[in-house]
Image (cartoon, rainbow, N blue to C red; front, side, top):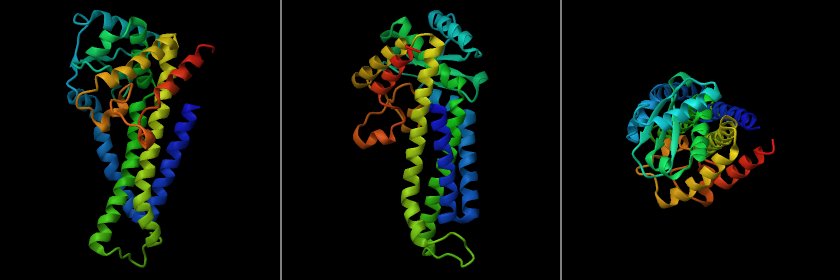
Length: 283
């Protein structure tokens, strides 16, 4: 169901790009915006591991430096059928973790010092299994594709905005861009809609990683209990210098917000994730 929802949302985002392109940018504008977004996100995809690891000062550790953590990761990757990822520790007291890498052969698992101290063995296994599920499902690739399309829509809106400011909003008679009123509405609505869909896809991938992580660990309760601790921990010790652009990578959102902000959240509510995990036990 999560995979189907991802496909449906991604299809909607693609259709939105075509519609927005026709409304405010025309075919040429759409192609230019898409190519610009593609280049930007290709670079991000290729170097995502180096960028985010440096951003949070994550340090690589060897098996000699962290034997218990290495043994746990190695046991779980064998169960998941994955290559051994690189292991990093983030010098943070906040309780969090993330995975990155452009494919399973270049996978990276990073955990904070705080999460290693706060969780018991079963809970930490659940967290690492969740991150390995992201790697196995190639969620970095999915996120890059989604970001490319959403970025192209936002660029189209910006291009149209500047064209209206400096060109008076005039269109050539041969331009098939459509009604100026429709274009104006799309300039405002389309970027917001694209962001909402992007966040919704991110939430579906979190549900899928929870499910896959429970299967890898062989027990959904470790991850469920860990999520409850992580939620409480995020309120007590927030992530230092958390960036909105990388919030989707962490197992729990390092940013806080309620109300309408839930629509723009990269993560589902913890209570929903825990409920779904506990329902897996009967299966």
